[in-house]
Image (tube, rainbow, N blue to C red; front, side):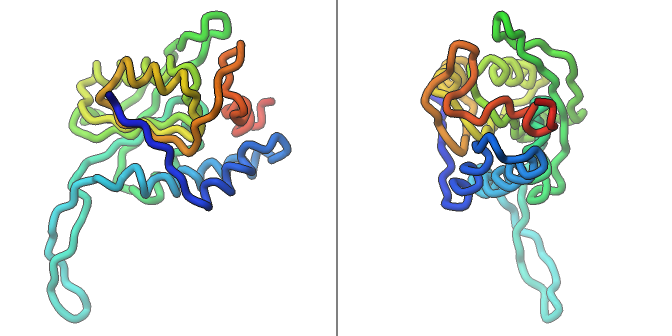
Length: 208
């Protein structure tokens, strides 16, 4: 069974409090989403392999260490874009791909409209980004797509998750490690996370 971890930290909790607030303006919402992603990046990369490298300081030669894993950040459009900059600031060597999905409001099933991935995506650890893990349909679809492109190592990162989405992800992709800043109560009849933070894409880009 895939692991699911809620990443807790006092600063994440405080920023999440304002991210959830319906009165937080779009500009501040975008900043908070990036900052939470930045803070979560420390936890989701804790197990990255490192390798020794010889460098020269102003005083002498010494052995230092660098990350030995090639990484790709892949946001699920459009809300996942809000998570990229925060993590990319910490991993500037990561390549960035994009998967475009929208949700059919009748069936709640994902529909693909765009996919652009690095040519060497199969050789990279992919960190898949989507602020909301709701039904899990979009996440499962995106992971299916990545695996069809030969990807073998995937971590999924959300900001807010629902139990229903976590359950489906664990059932369909037990090899994928997942992280979220919060595990909320349930989904409502429209497939939105409660208490959640509303439509993340609309709040991020001011299209309410």
